[in-house]
Image (cartoon, rainbow, N blue to C red; front, top):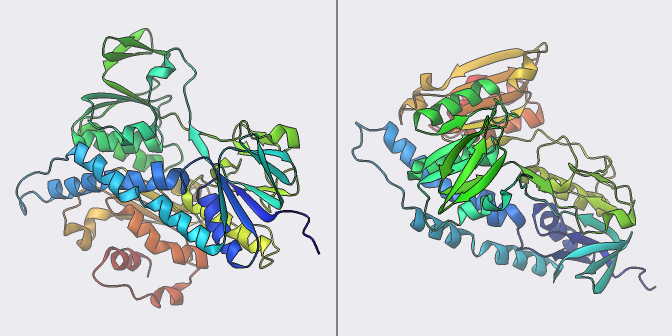
Length: 445
């Protein structure tokens, strides 16, 4: 019997929302294709998570050495050109490695811009057409550009991570992940950094008590924060860029980063033509990640959703679609607790019920001061706090921490939250001792 479509599933996009599920699905014997006009791995692998954490590693080391002065002697300075070269070396083979795994699993990869020309048909670069029973859109997001005069003078996060020399004076417009993380890095390298905030709160999705402490720490290190900046335009002044803000105020900088967020990649894809509904927040889907066109699905950061737009979310959604398409799961998607971290120094990490939510309900709240923990005194951590949220049966349902090891601590707590551990289950977890995990786990047993 002749198959009606050339492929069982076509994935559009090369990031985690596509390749994680595409590889697994192809291994079940289904005919799978992936179309991308970007490097395999998408933003996270090439211009996001992997690149960012490579640039952050020396910053973390620098902070540790600074804390331990008296036990060690001398200071660490960061060689930015060498660090950027190292970053490129670390990530250069990752796209090919992922591509090899896909092709070895049987996924066919096509290069070019994909657009929909029907509920089952994709066209590449306006020419070659391919059909599939199901199509998955996993095109992610791209950096926002301020709609103000002179916006072309600003740069995006990818350009920051490829700077061959660190500018002396940097302006960052925005107060989210990218702003705080890159302000941390640039400051540690030696740049003068000014952050222009739209309102009076940074990192609005994080616990503000901890955000204020991280902001204060960055300010003590020399980062300048301008609240309610009302940035109105950028102009060129010789080799410098002038930021116009507030009540006719100006400031001069060597380099300007627009960190005002990211927006979904939904344009020039034929969504309107085939009837896929979307908003400015992304593509609308039901609880099966199915769009308004039944044969077309979507996953990852391109979605209009309440869950955090992060790599773990995209990976989970891609895995869910693999299970759905292979018949292993016929249920609606049920998201687990998804942790998130901002890689400042110290970090803020959180998962599950937040302290702000807990204070509005009937929960048990336990607070830990990180410097009181003997294990954290080893490398002389002087700031940091943790909030644990329990239900009335003492199940851990939320953790928020700011510290130099916050992401490791939250990862340690994650199994308890996802699996609903009771007190007996807690005692079954025997962590390596001494370690961050053992130290963190002790607080809930």
